[in-house]
Amino acid sequence: MTQDQRVGEADVVVIGGGTGGYSTALRAAGLGLSVVLAERDKVGGTCLHRGCIPSKAMLHAAELVDGIAEARERWGVKAVLESVDWPALVATRDDIVARNHRGVQAHLAHARVEVVAGGAELTGPRTVRIEGYGEVAARRGIVLATGSRPRMLPGLAADGRGYVAPADWSRLETPVPGIHVVGDLLPPPSLGLAHASFAEGLLVAEALAGRRTTAVDYDAVPRVTYSAPQTAAVGLSEAAARDAGHDVVVNTLPLTAVAKGMVHGQGGMVKVVAERDGRVLGVHLVGPHVSEMIAESQLIVGWDAEPFDVAQHIHPHPTLSEAVGESFLTLAGRGLHQQA
Image (cartoon, rainbow, N blue to C red; front, side, top):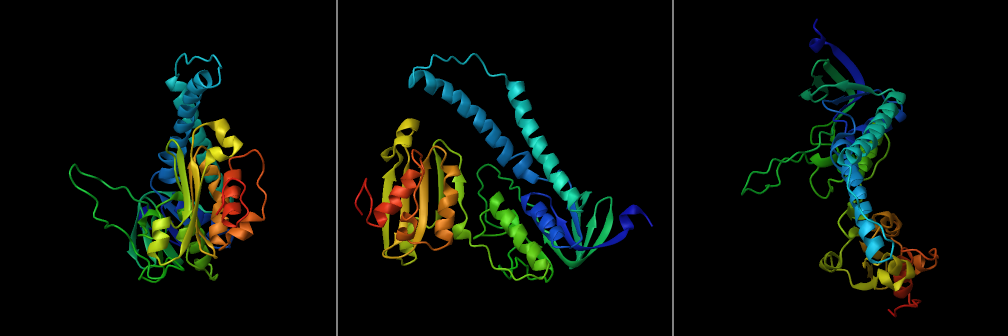
């Protein structure tokens, strides 16, 4: 029998080692299941090696360069940018990626996940053939976590096909029993975001372990755009809330309404959408560092909090987050900067 003809078994076989794939594998292993993870490139996927992490490293470097100009023009710091050592910058970026990659590898090894380097294909509802390894039978199920990579030709637009739709969103199980899907393969309302894929991986692993699971609440998943300024949001927009039939109230507050916003001097705003006399439906932020501020609002929206509930909590001073607190004070009828 050749190596490619070898037949093995595992409770779970995961195809794809990106965020959704390795989170599935780690959680399943943590629940006592045996796991084989097939990855033809490197565990960590697009997010770690080509997307989220390296791009944010480069963005941080760009922000440092911009900061020199701001220091000179706004703060009187006589700093001069001599040059950018591109090889050193790239080396730092690559070191950050490599350290994170080693961390993922170590976590998988510690959890006793068998990572197999090679492409994989389904050969049946419970069997997978892995290149250079052989066929593996999955006792509990197979998880598709292969991600996506569109090829856009000039003059043509994507047609929306290429998804694998689950029959049961509470288990992310396809119409073929025992085959589950996470990450970019999922159609809307899944968001195609790494942190959503992470949550989907935990959900599927727990479903395969026999635990009771509920569908991911995608409305309560934060969305961040690393533009200048940054934008971040969770929940419904004002338009979406009205279209859904909600009677809404809206509060918008500029970040410069709080002292730390003036210090940063980059503008921005907080916008809160809530039911009239009811729960918070959405929070939208624009400005510096709002990617680090949105998690609070995720809890507010996810737990169906009302403005009065949030207004009881004191925000530290001086911080940008005070603008979030002041927005909820205003909606609760207690604002100092505005009146509802």
